[in-house]
Length: 51
Image (cartoon, rainbow, N blue to C red; front, side, top):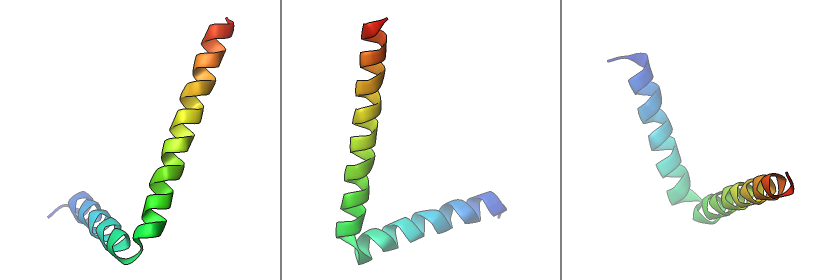
């Protein structure tokens, strides 16, 4: 088995464990990532509108 596959599966297992153990923190993180992406898209839109 390649090291990359082991690392990939370890990350997947850790993320699933974290979601099960602390769902509120996981939801908060996803919400913050959504806000970040929305703000970035809004900023790009404003930039290109002003050109």
